[in-house]
Image (cartoon, rainbow, N blue to C red; front, side, top):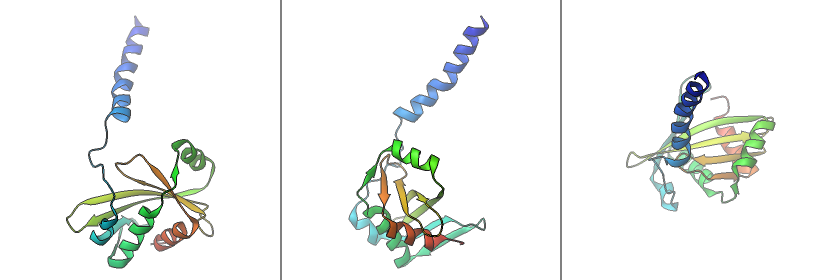
Length: 147
């Protein structure tokens, strides 16, 4: 009888969790278009000193362009393997458009010292992970280092 209770308890916990993870899509699914670069007003990200960093204008548009310019798709297996075995730094960057809409990117930078060798980028609401080249990864990483 106790085994049945344990099994039903585990099913009660894990079945809704799996349904949410695999079947329910994020409501904020965003279709990135080339004209969005001109709509970016500013970006926000967490600071090392427990505050918020806000960059506006050209700086924000440059970062947005670098994050959306990559077309090389990375598999989740490759991403998790690299994230598990290599030193990485994670940053969440929110972009605010002129209509008030927010677009969030998760950026994982690898080989942190002295320069970033590469980065993986994922827009929240989209399951696709993109690879950033060394130059763009270093530019983005150095823009937010020690801030």
